[in-house]
Amino acid sequence: MGENQIIKKRILFVDDEIMVLQGLRRMLHAFRNEWDMVFVESGAKALELMTQAPFDVIVADMRMPEMDGVELLKEVKQRYPQTMRLILSGYSDESLILKSVGVMHQYLSKPCSPDVLKSVVQRAYTLGRYLRNPRLKALIGNMERLPSLPALYTEIMSKLRDPEVSTQDITSIITRDLGMTARIYQLVNSAFFNQPQRVTDLNAAVSYLGLNTIRSLFLTANAFSQFEGIELPGCSLEEIWQHSLKTAVLAKKICGTQNNDASLGDDAFVAGILHDTGRFILSVNFPEEYRQVITIAREERCSLNHAEKMVFDQTHAAVGGYLLDLWGLPYPIVEAVYLHHEP
Figure 1: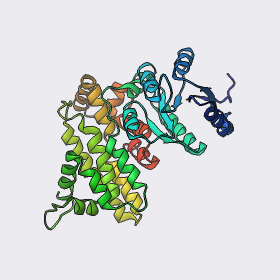
Figure 2 (figure 1 turned 180 degrees about the vertical axis):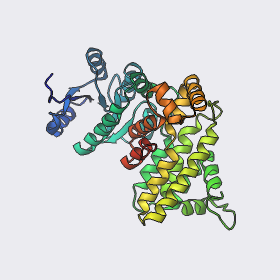
Figure 3 (figure 1 turned 60 degrees about the vertical axis):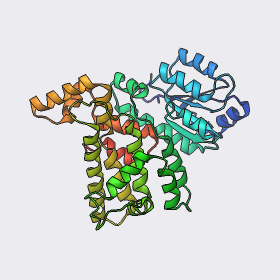
Figure 4 (figure 1 turned 60 degrees about the horizontal axis):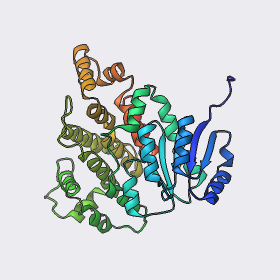
């Protein structure tokens, strides 16, 4: 291979409608020098191709005969966990979307601009290059105990895209989740916010915290609640939650003292509450190895970060950043999480 030859990303597009595939081929023609693109009409053909050569990304339609997009991505997840899995669909059937949450990395709606698709693929591929440990990268793609985006989070995000959304609209969604309701009351009445009297009205609590804070709380509290009761080496889920919450509140306050950009403060809050996601993922999926990390850090008096590199060849920051990028969180948040030990 020549020294300056570009290694193309291999991308597999699957849709049962020939006209759709032809449209995708035309739309993405400008990327032919960056992507090696293959277009097939069925899940069976896609799986056959994947036995012959690996693909970096698979983009599948939701509704297809014989094997739909969810069934296809389940097979890909099991056989080829390193492959990034995207659903590209014009259907907004809530039950189908909920079925796909555990097997896809992102859901993209048709029509999807080539720039959006390129951005999604490029971001995940760029971060993935930094995860040099093949075992770890594969396990991130196929971990059984990997937190997934909660169903109601998708609904909240859809509502927040509406410029006319009200706090009452969001409150009506939150009331369907008792755990989330409890978290909001816990936060708004905590010492962080110094309320003169206890807040007992949910709509008032949502208004006070703000929609961006609610969004990030919903993501973290719900995505990780499935792991409550699991014994973690060296800490507990509640300890990680409390530490992350303090970090988020302080990060937002620091931003407020430096400038008046509200969106930057919101990003800082979200990054703070998600910054130790990778630590949680590693300790849940590799409890014995993570006990070794803690032992090394204690005996050699070094940071957990340094000990993680010794055991996993990666840090929790890199693992967390990679997962959040697969989830499609805004890049400033992903970058902050990925680099929070290397500012």
